[in-house]
Length: 307
Image 1 (tube, one colour):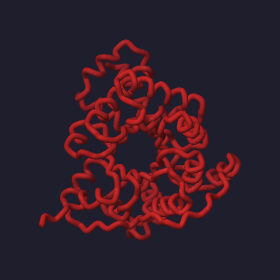
Image 2 (cartoon, helix red, strand yellow):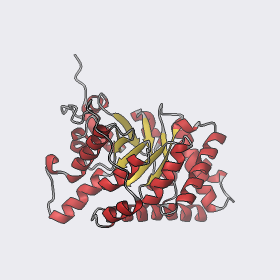
Image 3 (cartoon, one colour):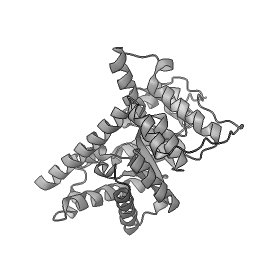
Image 4 (spheres, helix red, strand yellow):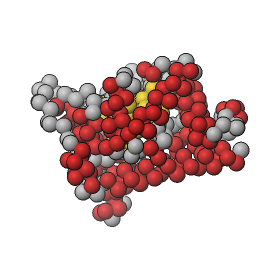
């Protein structure tokens, strides 16, 4: 009997998503879904692999060119995977509900022009209050959304209230925050704030019967991934996917659903959300994450301008 590696074992309990824009890696790793963000898109286009796409948008308005490049890369990814590709709205729009909705609709139209049905696309939006409300509008139009840069229970609750398709809690960035606060170089898995935050959100969703799925993201090591076996989805970098495939650590289902569904809590109001979020130290990670994606967007603009 062939012993399964840790990646094969994990895939029995969780949908595996590749966190990359590298087409070769996606083809090799064969994930169900794939996620991208501005940093990954920048890396993909900086590799030289997509020079023909870069040439095809020459002369366009730069922001429009980035939208076309983002969707063109997503279309290439969608041809490789069986599932969905997450495409991120410009992070500069994170606090503008209407602009986020319009950008998302533009992406869906561009995908349709390339023959990709909206069922193959997840619109990725930062989990600000404004972003969550944009996702609520889009979901009502049948456009599935992935709420990213999620660090707090307030964000998770508001996303569930909005009936979004899935959320992406950022495990590793919470762990990094914990290390910075405690001065510890390493943290045991059972004490890992990032891992435990995903477990708590998952259990809250399942206990109250929310349809929103949980996709853990931003991992620092394979032990965090193994600890979250059973989570709806996990989006994983190629390096960690390769590491999981190279070891035979035992993987058991750590997150499970429940048959006893409790009534949903009353939805958070905007005032309640802001009161909780503004007093949450982890809110700084949301702002920092948005700033990082804005910078990656600017770096891609600079690269296009120089080409």
